[in-house]
Structure formats: structure tokens, C-alpha cells
Length: 207
Image 1 (cartoon, rainbow, N blue to C red):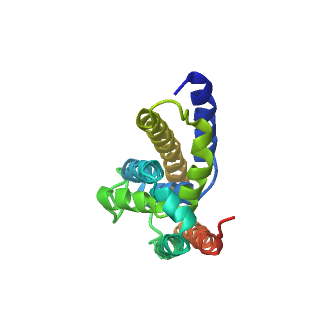
Image 2: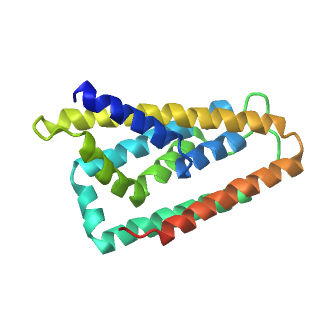
Image 3: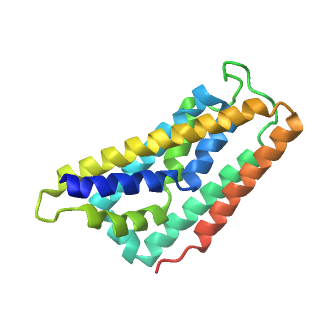
């Protein structure tokens, strides 16, 4: 991939990762409920989800989701249900302050990685989006595999770093919210946003 293609792709990747979405919500929810050190695990899961999406598109399976109404509907409803479930979990999260080490959270790092992966991987909107965007940065006259590897590596690293920032921001907010009542309100606000994201995904239709 030439620099003339890579530079605009890199800028687009940063802007996409910074934009609010289910990934940012998942990262902030982890930072709020798990603390900075443990919550960072979800950023790695989100990275794996981005790599999954890129692999799906690169393998041509994304075209199936883009053209098959049944396949798209199945993935869409699974993804929507997953986001709503995360919202319910966040809503019901206990309103207690974390210990200074951040080890008072009930979720393991493996569970957080799996949660992050699910948020990004089970989102057909992401697949359709990548199908629309990636061809603009692909040189059809050059070998495709090295280009997809560069795209996947760049997208994954940028996503991981940005999501780590969201985790850090939310964990800082958690430290400032000493009142259980405020923590409970914040958990319910985050849970409501997750459920709203799930509803929006359920209502999403391909153009």
C-alpha cells in the first residue's frame, strides 16, 4: 500500500475509532465497572473484533452478509440482542467503589476480552461499512493479502489505543463518583445507552 493511500486510510481509521459507538460504550462500561488495569482487557477484545471483521471482509464473506437478507438478519439480531444484554448487565451492576488496585470487579480479563470481541465482531453494520470503505484504499493492481494485513494491523492498533483511552477516561470518572447513588445512576445511564445501541442495530436496514 502506497503512502498516498495509507495516510488517508490512517486518518479515516483514527476518526472512525474516535466516533461514539458500541465499542466506545463497551470500553467506558469496563472502565467504570472494572477500573483501569482490569478494564484494559476489553480493548484487546475490541481489537480482536476489528481483526475478525477485516478477515471476514477480506475473505469475501462480508459480501455474503451484504447480499444475503437471511445471513444479515441473523447476525444483526444476534448483535442487537448481545448489546441489549450488555445494557441490562450494566444497568444491574453493583454501585460500589473499586478498591485501589481495581481488583474488586467480578469479571475476569478473559470475560472482558470475549465481551469486547463480541461487541465488534457481532455487528453487521461494521461489515457493511468496511465493504463500503476499504475498496477506496485498496490497490487492485497489487497483491491483496499484504494490503489487508496492513489495513488490519493499523485498524486494530488504532482501535485498541483509542479504546484504552476510553477505559482510562471512564475509570477516572469512577474514582470521582464516590457516592453509590451516583455510581448507580451512571451504570444505568451506560446501560440505557447500550440498550439504545442494540435497538438502533435492530432497526438498521441496508441501503
